[in-house]
Length: 125
Image (tube, rainbow, N blue to C red; front, top):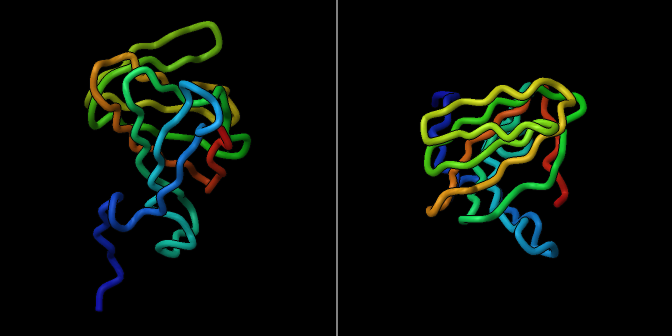
């Protein structure tokens, strides 16, 4: 049997709600690639779904670089005082330790694929 895995985040991912206790920060995360789920040693990845108006906490990944790919929706990425617009098909590179925030400023759900390397932790809010 082969070692390659074809994964569907909504079925194969570990579902987590973030920001439930803070209005405007609620989003659903589907961690799909990590050591626990697929045996990954060097990367953690998944999909986050933001409803219109929802945002992530301002956070960083102190030991990890991050790549995000927008597969549905639009929004802004906060980098310090700068707000950078993004849309479907855009990629983002976030260097190690840089504080950032994702905002869904559109009218439909935002689907954001994220990857960290080396593996890091999700924000807690």
